[in-house]
Image 1 (cartoon, rainbow, N blue to C red):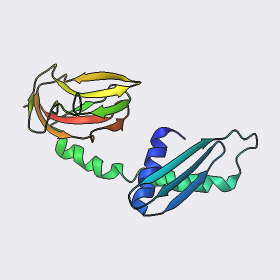
Image 2 (tube, one colour; image 1 turned 60 degrees about the vertical axis):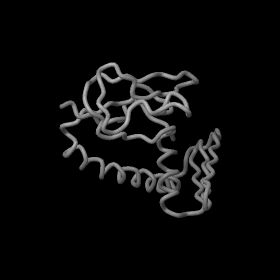
Image 3 (tube, helix red, strand yellow; image 1 turned 30 degrees about the horizontal axis):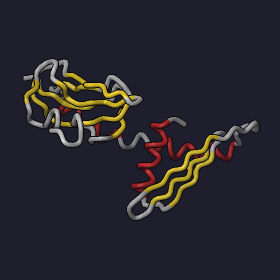
Image 4 (cartoon, helix red, strand yellow; image 1 turned 45 degrees about the vertical axis):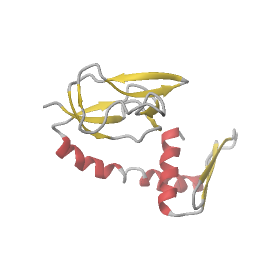
Length: 162
């Protein structure tokens, strides 16, 4: 189970309103507890020489089936956003809209940007990488929340090139 699947599972459990969910697979044990204000996740790697029983396969299937549901609304967006250019993350890391907490945001919605302008910072392994625009245009939408993890090739901004 990779990090993306664990993150999707946490989001799914938080939306479902369940207080605690335990998932045990052949080499991973996950316990997700949600409270009124906080959620706790414990992930434990376990090496087990015994092959995985068939009874555990149905437990993994509902999680996999629940994951394709969230992308459905985003598939309707590209039809109306097809005239926009999507700026994607070139690396995995943590997305930041400001150079530091006391500094202004690099790029805001409605701001006109030029090629080479810094749009955000992505922190990867304690290195802060400035992400520069490869296009000129106007920022239409910021697709990622500040200080949230991003994956390689994940859309970050929509830019209107006209």
